[in-house]
Image (tube, rainbow, N blue to C red; front, side, top):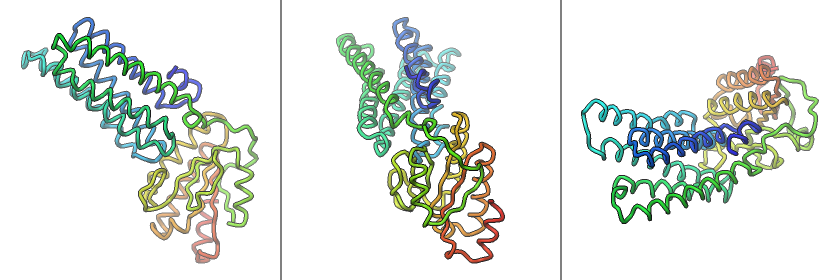
Amino acid sequence: MLAYVYLKYQRKPALCWSLSWLAASFSILSDMLENPYLLSLAEAFWATFLFYGVIELLNENGILAEGFKIVSIAPVIMSIYTIFLGNFGYSSDWFVILGLPYAFSALFIFFSGVLLLYARGTYDSNALYLGAVLSIQGLHELDYPVLRQVAWFAPIGFTLGAFLTVLSAYIMVRFVFTEEFIKFEKPAVELNLKPGVMIITSQEYPGLKETLREVPVLAFVRNPEVPETWKKFFITNATEQNAISPTNLGKMAEMASRYFREAHEKGFEGVLLIDCPEYLKTYNGFKALVKFLASLKDYATLYEGVLILVLEKGAWEEKELHLLESLIT
């Protein structure tokens, strides 16, 4: 079902999580076969794909930078290292070969749940439930190195693990079928906007909001009153959900590139709107802002999308305004 969501809606977190459950099934199988090396590696891939999918989700919502994805490979590296120690005779200790890498992977499952809690601003209670269950599941798996070989605890640990596995799978499937997760779809209305750059005034802005009410616009705004279908990010130095620092132009460019590409793949014009170029100029300077907007224009042109700027022309020097218009239109 997770793979179906990916194939139908092209949601990368769903693909990562489907692979994580595939790895989890191999983890259970290898435990039954009492193969410590396969168990260590399968558990590591379970944690890696799960953690990577969470980082991908948070990155889409502007909560974590994409660079955090590289951390997700750590459980696999730990597993391969301990397998190397065991196969080449450097250690035959069960805890080194299996217990330590298993616990390390369990920590990543735990932190996957913790990080999901930061997505509550977008996914509300769905993120809360999934994050809480994954955190508890990760904590439960941390007892594996200590209690796996304790005979009296084995049936208790298995029952608890089975319950948490089924519960987390159920909640995850519900999560990926929520409207918030899969709503980025081709709009029902047909757009008649020319690909490239549009510059409008603040007086024209309310009318544009109404025109694009049914379109999944990516909006970097100072005025948060926009249609619910828009994917908005508040430009501010305050640490809030769905907020981006005005100096983090690189992050905005990265998000814009991904948005235009995904919209193009789904067969419609992506629309990126910025209602605060003057605010961005204050924090970054005119030259840096022009370079940033020029890169956004390139993305819009490449993927046949539209970049809309809401300008207060009276706030610009005549020379700046002329140069800005000549470079990006």
